[in-house]
Image: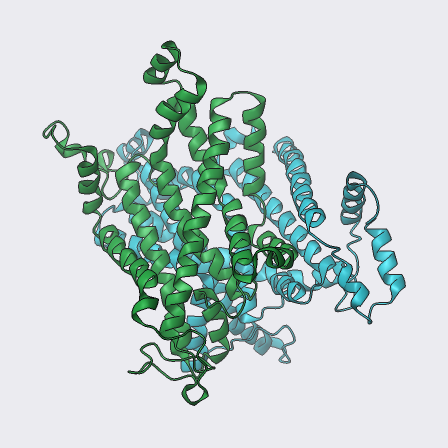
Length: 313
Length: 319
């Protein structure tokens, strides 16, 4: 009855087979568990499709993103322009494909930044007891209570021009946006890693390694960290979606990438003044962001069932 | 309860100091002179610039500058807006009510969605209702607020022409029609923000209730012969809300971020749109003050969450 309610929709997936088929490799077992979450599988397919589209699409649809054609302003989708055109007659399909590269790249790069920072802080806090642990956790809690979007905007406002001067407009904004977004997303990862470290370092196999004379570095790198990575990967997946939303938000407020770089958020920002006469413009850009975020969230949910079956949320 | 509140207040002070340090570091590390553009702005007289430099102590050592800045912030002496030529604090006091109104009502809406849906879904896990609610919640928090806002404008303002898409603080109507106009223009911003929060809270509520409903004391309550409604509302929900309050408190910064976007889309005259417009106008004193106000609001709402804890779980308050 109520007592047997599994915590997650697919949490009971693995238990039925336990002990029956010893030949299954961990990877195959993981794939079997992931496959049970049908929405996650469908999302993974869509996400791979989107990634391939933005990676190879510009080569297959060789229309320049900057071709201005005033005779074809604000056209709805048609044979010449499958997704229509914007207020300067620029082809929206080409701009969406190009912008998708940047939006997805920002998402993944910011995820990597947040994972590295979070794992570092969490691992150091988890392995060293006492004052270092307390200080790092205080820092984590402090960052968690910072008003992120206002600070994001302030940092970009203050540092944008000088970084642009050093690395060029596109590269400068890219580095800044990735660093800042990643810099505000590491806290949940740090907490997860610390919690994992606290429990794993007391386990027998780590104690055995310690008894055999393994150095702290070796204990961490060979024994604790690999076992702590499951929830981290799940958190990383969610971070990609958060970072894509954050980048789109910045661009949507007109404070992200410069106007000639059409990220999805920037397209939405430009489109919002033409909502009444050219709704397709805003709808395609918004739908792309929504689809990317939704599929990443579903893939994260599927991965959670695979890697982290105990956690519910 | 009084001692508990005092303890929480004392814990809030270091966080506020920490936030002020982060904010000040960002300002101090920023390349160039934040007041540099004043020199090239002919509308600002040189004595104002000198007064500002003196007030912010631009030439003192960093530590001294920090304490000066902090003292000025605490005194409510937040400087002078370059653009609108008024004191920053009066500008913020003028804008704050709209922000608090939109955030407050959207949180109420989010609770009204999340509590019933989450509890109902958790009492019937894996039913059709649960699966639909779960999928809708996923869609809800994957839809960025700026896109939902545009969709709402497209549907309700442009196609159906039901609701105004510009929020006005100077409604000319009086009496009952003022309330009606105010209500009509608040629907879309509040709905956009409330639905986004409601979607993620629904998942929190569902899983928290699922965790609690399996415990033995719930079985005891049922065995006593209590009605199911009473078991769920009096025994399950109150305990399930404790982790939910934690997660909601953790989400406070996100909520304020969402408010900035919503205010910008619907042109709500709150401090979020003030922040964006002052960033676009390089109005540094306003930018710093608004960011500080947002930080204070986050801390304040975390304090409310702590009070709520004390009420939900008296053991925490009397420890």
